[in-house]
Amino acid sequence: MSESLPRLDELLERLENDMRVEIEKRGLSDPVMIGVLSGGAWIAQQLHGRLAIREPLGLLNINFYRDDFSQIGMHPRVTPSKLPFRVEGRNILLIDDVLHTGRTIRAALNEIFDYGRPAQVVLGVLVARDGREIPVQADCSGMRLRLEQGQKIKLSGPEPLELFIISSSNIHEKHEQKLEER
Amino acid sequence: MIRDIQFDDAGRLRHFLTLEGLAPALLYRIMDTAESFVSVTDRQIKKVPLLRGKTIVNLFFENSTRTRTTFELAAKRLSADVLSINIATSATSKGEGLLDTIWNLQAMHVDMFVVRHAHSGAAHFIAQHVEPHVSVINAGDGRHAHPTQAMLDMFTIRRIKGDFTPLSVAIVGDILHSRVARSEIHALKILGVSDIRVIAPPTLLPGGIEQSGLRVFHDLDAGLRDVDVVIMLRLQRERMSGTFLPSKQEYYLRFGLTEARLRQARPDAIVMHPGPINRGVEIDSRVADGVQSVILQQVGYGIAIRMAILSMAMHSGDAAAAAREAS
Image (cartoon, rainbow over all chains, first blue to last red):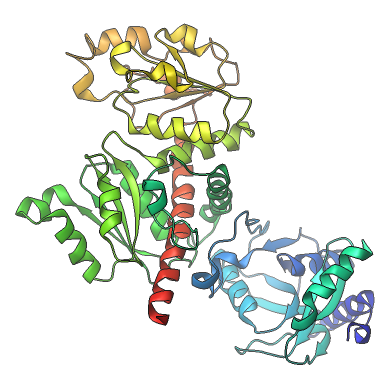
């Protein structure tokens, strides 16, 4: 199944183009970029230079905003969020790797609003897959994808960045395969 | 064993009563979690929604403005609802027993108690009698323990000094009666500090302390030589004259930290104090307000450390409630 995925640089190029069109269409002046840790931040690092964003990249750790905290608890060594710019009134490009249930983006939006009230937020994701649980959609994406039950899409990185599909039945197999490759 | 009651069946932190017997990994985990809470105060909205819908009761049988305030702020920054009750002037003065108070509050669907009590073991006693989904945090019990104060001090040391192992740390003052000192010593040992010193007059040291692996000094100048961290303890008013000490003036002459005495320590040594300070008794104002003092930083870090402990313990309570509903 992983063979059917386009190459990662191709997906990044599509996402970049999609975002250029959206920035142009909305007339967004001087946007800032925020990547959701960790996969979204890796993608945002790639796009930040390509889209010539003036201000440094913002990083968002949504762990304190997760709606499943009572099930999963605290993650130790949480990299703190870092937004090195004012959020109030700004045009924000929010980047994540995979849009699945929509809960991560909901948490990310809640956190961003705790820093201030942005003018607009554009959501860009490398892959928008099926399985939405709340009404959140991407404005820009590298690809849209429908997966079979039990399948997941995963980005590993940051160096090298690799995108692959795993099935619940062969997660161990895939991990072993990746270890051998190294 | 207090240590056992602190964890749920899955090995997660449920109550936080003492540092005694805890693993270094847990102490590091608390500090790592606190690290990520430090930046919350830089935001426009100084809150995260982790404990939204939870109710925390500060049960203070002993007055302490600073500890109670930092616990209250920590809970509010986690979005919990907080109730602070000064028990000395309410329930127990009407003859209501301790457990009746606890059970009544539990009936109001409280999720966590933060307890300060003059009797050693009080927090442990309450922890033994609460429902499975309720957590108890020790905010100081008698002469026994003050684990969150010790953790915020460890967090302050790590932020400034980094690695614990090569450090020389001196604790100065009333070691005998101090729950802070007891918890600090446990924490420093767990974290592998190689040189832990206690400096005090013999009347303010527990018997047999020489056998505990600490270096004992009765002379402040000798004890401070080349240390990296100086932790000053507050001298309680009732010890300032009589059985334990001739007078507070005498104490200051021999054990008060002045600029001249601090020069015995390393030039980059930091000075800590759990507060509130008795200026001119255990510490000179020029030291307390000087460049080597990190006393106000301790206060700020106290909120982050308490946020970490509250959120870690609350998660265990959630798991207990989920298990109860499933059964």
